[in-house]
Structures are given as C-alpha cells and as structure tokens.
Image 1 (tube, rainbow, N blue to C red):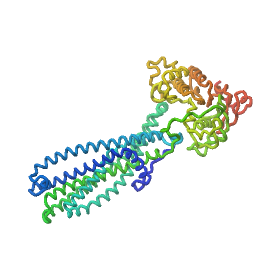
Image 2 (cartoon, rainbow, N blue to C red):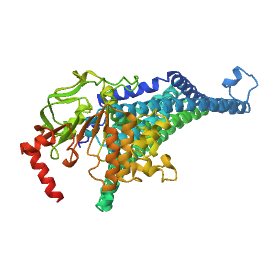
Image 3 (spheres, rainbow, N blue to C red):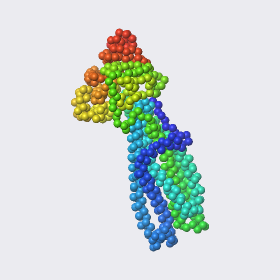
Image 4 (cartoon, one colour):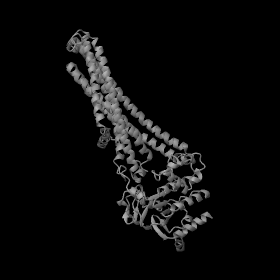
Length: 602
C-alpha cells in the first residue's frame, strides 16, 4: 500500500496548508477560552512582575547610594531594608500567579488535546475501508500518538513560554529605553542582526523537525507490521530480517535527529555567542557612559539586569521558535486525517436496520479497487438473491467473490451499476443500516484481546450474559469453554492466539448468532480445519443458517452441493448460475472445477 508522505516546504517556513492546519487545531484550545485567556492574563502579570523586580533592583541600588528612590514616594523613611519585605511579598504573589497560570495552561492543553485525540480516533474509525487500505496502520497510530503528544507539549508548555518570553523581551526594551535611552539605542542597533539570523536558522531547523517526525512514523510502521504478523515472522524465521528493517529505520531516524541536533546546536551557540557578545559590548559602552556621560551606577545596574533578561528572552525565543516550527508538521499530519470525509456520523444515533423482506439485486455492477484502477475486480455483474436463498459464490482466487460481499456491505461506495435491497439502492441508506442486517463469519478470524465473552458480545454490545451464553451454546463454544478454569472470562490473548482455529471460528459464529442478522456471509469457515473441528463448526453453521439468507464464499466445492443457487465467477464475470446438478450437467467451468478438486483429494 502506498503511504502518503507529509510535504516538507523547501524553504523551511510554514506553508499555507500548515498555517490552516494550525488554525484548525488551535480551535480545540479555544473551546477552553476562559481558562486560556485567564492563563494569558496571569502570564502577562507574571512576566510583568519579573520586570518590576528588575526595576526595583535598580531602585534598591539608588537607595544604597543614598539617593531618592521609588519607595520614598510612599514611605519617606524607606531604605534598603524595606526592599526585603517588598521582594518577599512579590515573591509570594509571583508564586501564586505562576502556579495558577501553569495549572490553567496544563488544563487547556490536556483537555483540548484530549478532545483532539478523541476526534482523530473517531475520524479514523469512521473512515471508509479504502482509506485505511491506502495508509499504513503504523503511520495512522503515529499521528494518533507521536504527533498528538507534540501538540500537547506545544499547547501546555511551548506556546505559553513563547508568549512569556515575548512579553519579557518587549517589556524589558520599553523600560531600558525609558531609563537609559542613549544606551538603549546602542543596544537596539545590535538586536535586529541577532533576530534576523536566528529566524533564518530557525527555518532551516524546521525542515529537519518535519523529517524527524516522518522517520519516527516509519519506525512505528515497521514495529506495528512485525508485531501484528508475529506468527508469520516466526514461521519464516525472519526475526533477523525484521530486526534489520527496524535497525535501518532507527539508524535513519538517528541520522536525521543528529542533523537536527547539530543545526539546533549551531542555533543555540549563535544565540549564546551574540547574546553574551552583545551584553559585553553594551556593558563596555555603559561603563564609558558612567565615566563620561553622567549615567548613574543604579541606572547601569538596572540596564545590565534588563539586558540579561532581554538576552535570555532572545535565546529562549529562538529555542521555542524552533520547537513551534516543528509543530506545524504535526498539525498538518493530524489535520490531513480530520479533513477526510467519513462514511458515517458517529455522533448521531445509530439508524434503524434497512428493511429486507424480498431480494438483493446486483444490476450490471462493475468495480476496481482504488489501488488497482486499471484492473476490474468485478465486471458487469447482474445477480438476484431472494430472501431465504442459500447462494454459493465459487471461482478461482481473484475472481471477485469477496469483492461482491464487500460491495454489498458498503465498504466501497464508488462502483458502477446498482446494488439494491428490496428495490432500494444501498447508496440511499446509511452504511450502518445496511451492515446491521449483515453478519460475516470470515475464514481467518481475528479476535480482540479481551475475554471469550467480550468477543462474543461484540456482535451485540448490549446483550445480557444469558443471551451471550445462549449464543455460545448454539455455536458449540461451550464445548471447549466448560473445560477452561475461567470459562467465558478466559482471555484469548492478542488477536486470539490462545485459541485454536476451530475455537476462534466458533466464537465468530457465536458473535454472528448474537447479532441475529437477516443476511449471513460465510467465507468458507471450515476450509482450514481438522475433521473434528470442522464437524463442530459445520454443526454450528447449520444452526446459524436456519431461516436466513446466506451467501457462502466457497473454496471447497464439496460444501456447496446443497446451495439453492451456485454462482461461478471467472475474471470478475459470471460464467454460470444454477444448482449443483444443473451445473454438473452443463459440463462447463463448474464441472471442471469439481473434477479437479476431486482428483486432488483422491
């Protein structure tokens, strides 16, 4: 399957699509606007209080020189000692404000991202099958985990701190410009150079950040594939092959991460070099102004403190700017999923099942899979299945047997022709309405990693324990469950690995019995079982098929002799239709297939 790659802007700056994605994701934070705005106000107060402390430090230097200072306007006898109490009060106030600010931003980040995570999962689970087949599971999981975690860190920490440093930067500039305008102008002549070079380096860093996210997603894809196909890996003794795949992906990720780290290191070194170089230059200029231009020592002290604050803000702004640029790639990857059209609305109530009282009809239906548009999976199929029919669809692999069932279930809506139930097109109904009437027992059953009871109840989540037990009895599940210490509460393991093939088939049949569908699809549920298991499964299937319209995708022709109608497919076209006796009498493809299988079994 092809994997969609995230676009990396050549110039390193956020693209228009990334800005749109960022605005879209920001909407999740805005849902908690009261907490967010309150946090911003407290952030402004916290940053301002820090600047106030710097200002008071300069005033304290004035007091130490015996000059008039700001506190004497309120307390005539105030001296240096008074500043201790003022600083203590400000410290307590700052602690309360900072705690509340961090709590509010954490709340906004956690709740907002939780909403985003839920919506992303809901969107993925509601997408049509073709989208899932076009995208690797590991890549989708990476968007749901790594990308979301990066956004969470941005909203909880990076964005607030970025705003705080902006306030400190401009607030510090305003104060020193008021207190020492000449020295401020000298410093301001240096800052633009630092900012421009920092922005240029930041854009370059962003490109590596996007590549880093993609390389991480690639490692997740490899791990997910290896773990989900664990028995296949073991059977082919491909542990070393998978380890090599993962090692190469990790090495690629490390290579990109190290380039990312080197660029960030250059960025930080540049900021530190220019920050301290600028600070030393400003101090040298300030010392000359104290000596020749009458600048007071207290004003120079304030200027030095605020220059340090501004320098620190520049360094932090550069770092947070780089992190923020990296977040744009994550927002786009998330928004790519959220912008996809879904096949159902999960927020709405489940619609009622589509009525089925007469027949199913395929009317000149043709279809090609999205990944193989030039090869028709089925071509011009016309078929009527009356209520109560037991229809077998036979043919070689790739002839279109499973495709017909997938189209009936609404897995692929883009087909030519018409599929109707009781004369009404299935496209005119919600897919949930159609699928509620269809029960599928696949050939290769994959169970969820819960208990046997949980897996049976998946057919009807609201079923009572008594109903689950009754379904298990009809499907011959109790035949092996009664011998288990924990009975129906026995855990089946990841993908049902603790159960045999026949046991998993019976659990799948019990699930279908519990669902009680009007249309039953059997994908040759006994083709890979031993004789004892086949007998138990076949007995359960016969109970399940009673009074239902059944479609059997048959691989072993010996199982379809009693079908009311046998449909022979070849290269996506219907070659024959009839019962076993009539088709054998025709001595065409079906007759040849039966004879071939009989010779193979002899």
